[in-house]
Amino acid sequence: MARPDAEYEDDEFDEAARRTEELRAAGYAVSAHYDHVREQIVVSLSDGTVMRIDPTRTRALNGAAAEDLAEIEIMGAGVILYWPRLDEGVSLSVMRERFPPEGGVRRHETGQ
Image 1 (tube, rainbow, N blue to C red):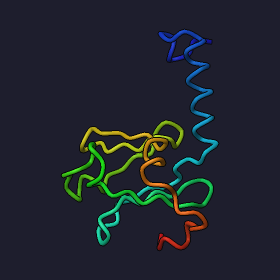
Image 2 (cartoon, rainbow, N blue to C red; image 1 turned 180 degrees about the vertical axis):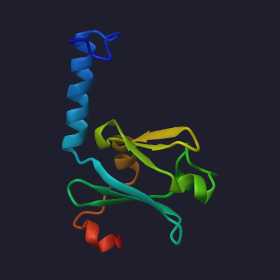
Image 3 (tube, rainbow, N blue to C red; image 1 turned 180 degrees about the horizontal axis):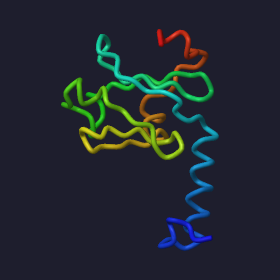
Image 4 (tube, helix red, strand yellow; image 1 turned 90 degrees about the horizontal axis):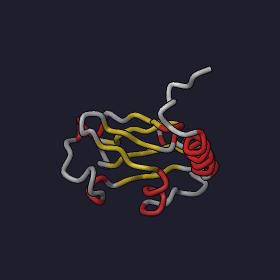
């Protein structure tokens, strides 16, 4: 059966799949929204922790309008956040280093 990614070598595809699984093991995004009051992006992770991202502290999102930040898509099996209005995406692994998840904060505590 031909895969839609046939232009990639099997080794490249397998490596990408392995890397995605490694990233997902650290926790992946299950929901994301822009908090207009706190002016933060709030990402709920699969392990129940919450990541709060200050967009002014990221090169890709700094200066973006609130309505552009509010439209967020979760991609790459939950390891990439994408803002289609800005045509910008960020990896959760990069964001996790800059904005560590709040341990013990559960999704139901975020007011969602």
